[in-house]
Amino acid sequence: MPKAITMQHIEGGKPGKVYYPLNLIDVPTPKPGPSDLIVEIHAAALNHRDFFLRQHLYPAPSFETPILADGYGVVTSVGSAASKSWLGKKVILTPGRGWKEDPLAPETPYAILGGTKTFPLGTLQEVVVVDQDEVEEAPGHLSASEAAALPLTGLTGWRALVTKSGNAEKGRNILVTGIGGGVALNVLQFGVGLGINIYVTSGSQEKLDKAKALGAKGGVSYKDEAWEKELKKQLPNDRPYLDAIIDGAGGPIISKAVRLLKAGGVVVQYGMTVGPKMDWLMSANLNHLELRGSTMGSRKEFRDMVKFVNEKNIRPVVSRTVHGIDNLKDIDSLFEEMRNGSQFGKLVIELGGTTSKL
Image 1: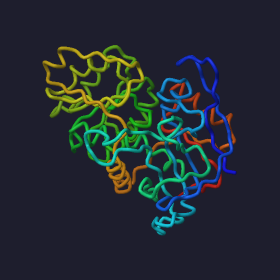
Image 2: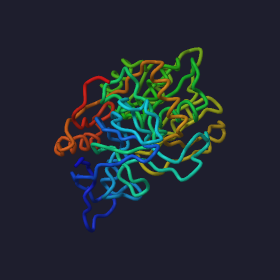
Image 3: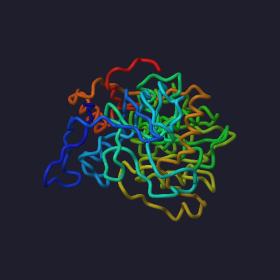
Image 4: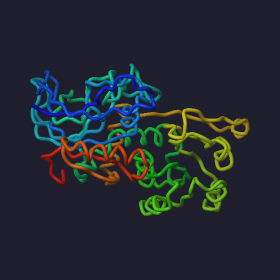
C-alpha cells in the first residue's frame, strides 16, 4: 500500500505548547473518478503553516489528512473523461481549492491542502488523486525539488507582488522583508524578472549577500535599530523612495514604512511571523498609505505564475532536500531548521523514485 505522513495526536496538548509527532501510515491506493488523475508524488515541500499545524497554531488540524501542500509528481493513470494527454506528464498540484479567478477574494470557502479538516488531501504521500483542472505541467527547466518548492510560496508571492501591490512595473522600488523565506525569495525573483528594483531585509548578512547575488539592488539588517535610514541611502537619486513594501513579518513595519514609502505607497501584508498584531499609525493616514492584506491566490494567478516562471527561466531556491518518505528523522530535521529560521529557500522531501531533472 502507498505510504503517507500525518500528524499523531497528543491528548491534552495546548496550542503553542504541543508539538505533534510525525506518523508514517499506509493509505489505500486511490482510484480515479471520471475527470481525475492519479499522480505519483516524487517531491513535496514544507511551508510555515505545516510547522504551525504541528504546534496547533493553525485552524482545524487533522490527524488523518496527510501534511504538506506543495507537491510535484508524474501522472500514472487518468479517469475515463480526463484528457489522455496528461498520462506520463510531470505536474505540480495547485495548493488550494475554492478560488477560480476573482482578483478580490475567493468565490467560495477557500481550503489549502495538507493537514487540516478543511480539505482531505495533502502532498506528503506517495500517490494522490486530483481533478485534471487542479494541476499544471511542471516547468521543464526545474529539478524535482525545485518544482515541489514552487506552488504555495510562488502563488502567494505572485499575488502579493503582481495583483496586490499595484507596482509590478519596471523601475519601481519595492522592499521585500525577511529574505530567506520561500515567499520573499519568490517575490525577489519575480521582481527581478519584471525589472523592478528589489531591496531586502534580513537579520543575517549571509542572507543579504545571497539575495544580492540573486539580483537584489540592496539590503539592510532589521536588527539595526534605524535600518530604514540605511536603506534610504541605498535608494536611487532619481527615485529616492519606495513604491511598495511586501511584508511577511508584521510588527513595527508601519513605523518604518512611513519614512520610506512615497505618498500613496502600499504595504502588502501576507504574514505576521513577528506577531498576530500590527500597529497602524496616524502618520500612515497623513501620507495616504494603503495596507493590503493578501494570502495565497486564485487558480488563474497560479496559472499566470507558472507561465512567468517558464518564460523567465526562474528556479525556486531550495535550501535543503532530504530523501525518503520513511526517513522521519531527517524530515523532522527540516522542521527544526524552520524553527531556527536558518534556511535560505524551501525545505523539500524527495519521496523516492524520482530523477534529478524533470
